Length: 245
Image (cartoon, rainbow, N blue to C red; front, side, top):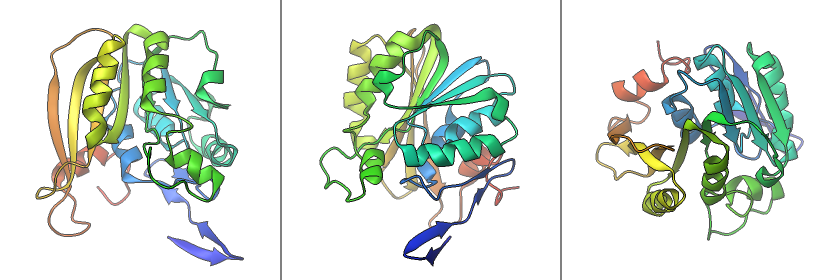
């Protein structure tokens, strides 16, 4: 929900069960893609987690809620998004375990080897650029794309580490092929459908440095009725959304 104020929309905090998210500065607001990825990613045994292109910081904060010991690092190139992310980190119960680096991924020089790397990368390659420069960075893969993330992950994941991504469904085959060529192998895949009668529009992908038996799944977000969420979606996101008991 938003209200106009001097020509600019002022967004209310997005309230989750254990934290809230400010999103007045970040170009890209809270969306289903990020929540799906944040809830779906397996961080049970992780000690070091990295979220690439963190935006408001919501995905990283979700991992801090899920894992009570892990250190979570965030990378974000856009200054406006970093303003929100810093506020949200400071206000969340796990702020002492979350760090943010402001800058491009190629400038993030770390010696860490991560257990889990997560990213909800921009994926508009050919659409018109947004007039707002921050929104352009957030929406377009000119600033960050899955190939950069895969190359970084190949170098900076530990031997048992995993990379989790969410992408448009039509980019999955190319992403999987590129990952295989760079020694990251598909271990989990989940097709995301808005409704049962719709084609999958997003895909959740988990890659590992070691080849494993592939786990396949499909998640349907809503029934045929708008905002009537499936039990499957409720179960996945129940620990976060306040609308689910």
